[in-house]
Length: 95
Image (cartoon, rainbow, N blue to C red; front, side, top):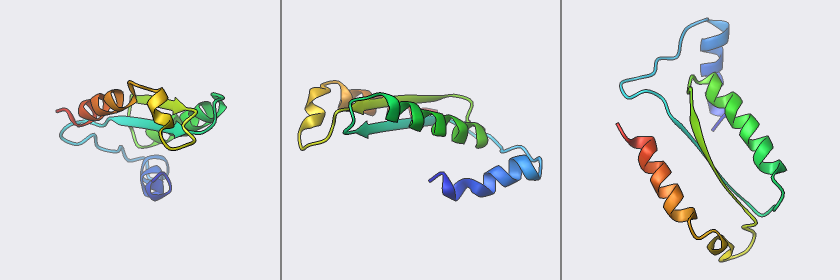
């Protein structure tokens, strides 16, 4: 997804044109699910997402991360994951 937004980077930084917020503004959500238990993956992905969201003029974003999800059913060790993701999605599309 980030790769497909190079045109927005060019518009903002090369052509010096603002990226319009649109009728409902701009919001972002980063959802990370990984097999690794260490937070380094979350930190690296978070840094990339922060740069991306800044580039496409999204002033704030929410990050949800669930680590240690490496096998079938492992997400069940995160009992609130589905609810949290659902609520974050609702917030994302809320007008």
